[in-house]
Length: 141
Figure 1: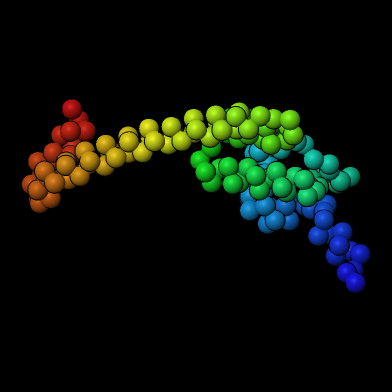
Figure 2 (figure 1 turned 45 degrees about the vertical axis):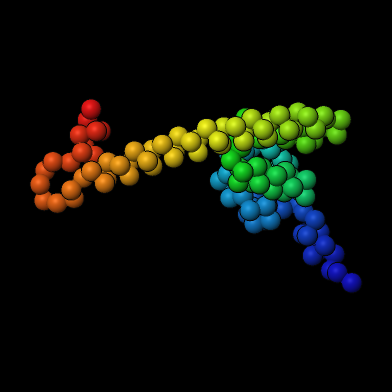
């Protein structure tokens, strides 16, 4: 049989450090997400310490996974609202995901072009003791 105290801790409330460890989100980012309204203000003890429950930890994990996929804070806010709305249309979620995919494709193309330009400039640079450098010439153009 599990000790009552241990069962209580396993289900919360958790302090910010425990919530951070359980969700994989740093304490600093938890405070940031609260300030942005992504995580609602949580109950505080008489001493002012935040107390998080399983629901908040689950929300923090959701935010962490969305950030890992590169969603913006605005997109995460929309996704959170849809996630919490059991009457949502999955088409709304798909629209956000596909818009993010299009943005990623655009950024990948931009980065590939940057890489190609830098490779070309580096190839043209002699890399010796002379001051002539096509990389700097291009940057100054």
